[in-house]
Amino acid sequence: MNLVGHLNAFVAVAEELHFGRAAERLGMAQPPLSQRIQRLERELGVRLFDRSSRRVELTAAGRMLLEEARDILERVERVHTLAERARLGETGALRAGLPPDLGGSVVAALISAFRDRRPEVRLDLREIGTTGQAQALTDGTLDVGVLRHPCDGRALAFGPMLAQRIGALLPADRPVDGPLHVADLAGDDLVTTPREEAPGPFDEMLAVCRRHGYDPPNVHEARNTQFALGLVLAGTAVALTPRVQAPGVTWHPLAGDPLNQRVSCAWRRDDDSPDIAAFTETATAVLCAEADMTPLSPSSPTRRVVPRPAFGFLA
Amino acid sequence: MRRVEEAFRDAGVTGWLHAVDLDSGREVSVRGDEPVVLASVYKVPVLVAFHRQAAAGLLDRTAPVTLRPDGRTAGPTGISAMLDEVRMSLRDLALLMMTVSDNAAADAVLARVGLDAVNKAMADLGLSRTHIAYDGRDLHATLLEDGGVADLGELWGRLDEPGMLARLRVLDPARTTRSTPREMTRLLAMVWNDEAAPPEDCAQMRRMMGLQVWPHRLSSGFPYDDVRVSGKTGTLPTLRNEIGVVEYPDGGRYAVAVFTRSPLPLAVLPQADAVIGTAARLAVGELRR
View: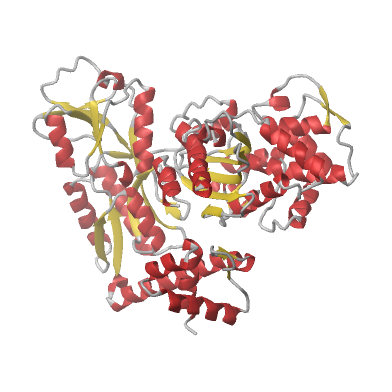
């Protein structure tokens, strides 16, 4: 029997708990789907679903096998991905993700430095946000990435953590006397990269802003840096970003540097390819030299955390 | 349950949920069979094992226990936070363990029941994927050792250092006290259906879970005067959990288990607490349709 196809049917029905919806999801009719499940149950010698009532439910055996089935399907998917890469002759290519707002000169410097170091490896660069990179790395459709922290990276390994100072981008004609505090922005709308691209840094930035007395009335999410710049130029919103130079706007550091952007290379924990190591070293060096980033040392001052009972140890 | 997933995503967490109607058996699951870290939710298995032993005559629930101030298991509440010697019955220690998640009280109860007995009770109840690895004291020691820190304040402050989260064994379900959302709602179902222990013991367990003080998680999802929410929270850095039972005046009873993990290294994260209630309400709403 085609075990993979049958397991696929099993997982679909187990997730939908409804033969009609599962059939729709698989793009097949319901009777052949039911036959597939019956054949699989005969093959395995156990009932996977209780269909006694009007509802479909997993049996204890079905629940036990579901995770294994998912695992097998994921591995099969990976075999196909690897095979496709081999077929396309891409085993000599390194698929790397970069955040959308990195800047043209940084990207160019990175490509050039990597080419000098590993001329035999073709660098396949893609512009992807942190969430997309973490997902693609886990799926195996990306080999290495440069992503922002904090992010959900349980399956990933990370290179050296780099920090980039964040300041406020204001219209050039807006008067600023002395050092600019976050609270001085009170009342201004904020424009920043979309939350879905990197929810961790987005939530963290807003939490720090509120903590320092700036609760933006509106937060505009701009995918495109030119759009964000437009909102700043028009006086509609201020941006909190790493240093930017553009006509009509001025970048101001923030007093006390309450905000920074943390970035590192990331790859699958089980992938120890030397190309990834070379990319990580190159990218880390280029980001420090070209993008105003500095390595975050473990001796950086410890954040102050005041314990509260409801969030305390084993509460 | 796409809406539950959306709620988790909006709150910036990864979430695991299992909810079941205790009477019809209908259920809602979002990764409900994946292993999760229990954190203080492990006090529910300890409570169940305690009552099974008491019912079997293996221990006297009213036996007084003296807890000296030196060397108490760390924690922010109850006897863990007290300065003087305390003398209390085992069942009242269990009450503090459940209502304010008192770690010193929990370790005193667990010391009397025995770790192996708790794991055996879970196995006897058919919960094969539930495992209690250590008591609160050893968990605390493991956490500080893995983090290379002197205390929890320092750990929180250094949580976003590269590699720190990956080093902490107590956050990895494969290497610490664990279960699955489904097994936790199964355990609650047995407590609410008088199957986990004799009926009078199950009634005592339900009473204690109904007296839990925390308003910020499961309870926050059901802001209704006529609905009873009983539960037990669990908290470790980046992890926020609660399992409990929601009871409506029309007789509807729903066991819910919600486990979350946040990428933010922040101790105070109200949206991550509140989404436990929101996700539970969405799941219970689905079961009540």
